Every structure is written in structure tokens, then in C-alpha cells.
Length: 165
Ligand code: S3P
Image (tube, rainbow, N blue to C red):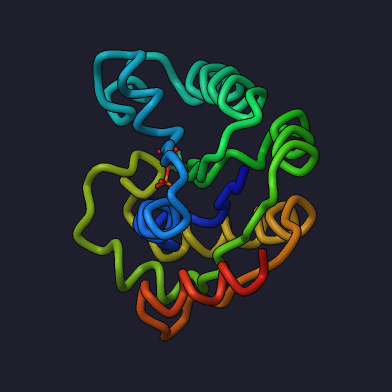
């Protein structure tokens, strides 16, 4: 099983979907799985119940998806590494790839995106910088290897991942 981790907008879902197709594996996206269970968007749930309720559900979904030894690629939400138990499950049960992207590059990609609750602030770039400062060490600690997402196309990124497996 392969898990993709990294900041929002680092390409986890896009790369994950291609990678799964290339390997003939099933693709799971923890955010999609959470939305399926909630029956509403993560953004609405965040507003109604707050971040910690969301994190609890995220923990359950990560535990369940990584427990079965499937031929699967799992793309995770950007905050999946915040809880130590998630870091442990991901690292021990899957081969973890960190898609590394700098806050400035992510900002350029996500400027017009309104679906991500953590970026609905007056200064999203500052927010991305502080999220990055907090999380980059956690992504590195959890990952088995790191892929630079700066310039390459999705196809190249998928090739880079396959070569590391
Ligand atoms: C979050 C990232 C989102 C989603 C939720 C929280 C985060 O996933 O899980 O909005 O804490 O960074 P993406 O990384 O797919 O945007």
C-alpha cells in the first residue's frame, strides 16, 4: 500500500489517481471518504463542528484504510500528519511518499480555491507559510521518501514515484 502526504495543493489526489491507474491499484482519497461518510462537504463540517471533530473522523478513516493490506494508493488530507497515531499508522503500514511543495508554489495553485477551510483567511500565503513551517518536519518524519513537485508534469512525478518503490 502506498500513501501520499503533503500540503494542500501539492498534487496528492492527482498524482495518486494516476499512480493507482499505472500500478493497477485501487485509489482512495481520505477527504473523499470523509465526505462520503458525512454526507456533506468538509468545509461545511469544519464550520459546524470545528477542526477537532474533523480530525477525529480523519483518524478513524486513516486507521481503517491502512489496516487492510490492500493493493491501494491512498491520498491523505494535508493535516493527516498532525496526530502522532496517524503518522505511526501511515509509516508502519504503508510506503509513504511526501510530495514536497513550497508555500509560494501552493499559493499560486490554490489562490482561487474556496473549498479548503484552512485557507479562508485574510492572508492565505502567510497561513500556508505557517502551516508549512509546522508540518514540513512532520511530513519528513512520516515519509519513506520525498518527491520535489516544483516543475515536473504529473506524468513525470508518477514516474519518479514508481522509480522509488
Ligand atoms: C486540510 C487539508 C484538506 C482537508 C481539510 C484539512 C489541512 O485536504 O483534509 O480541509 O489541514 O491541511 P487537502 O490536503 O487535500 O487540501
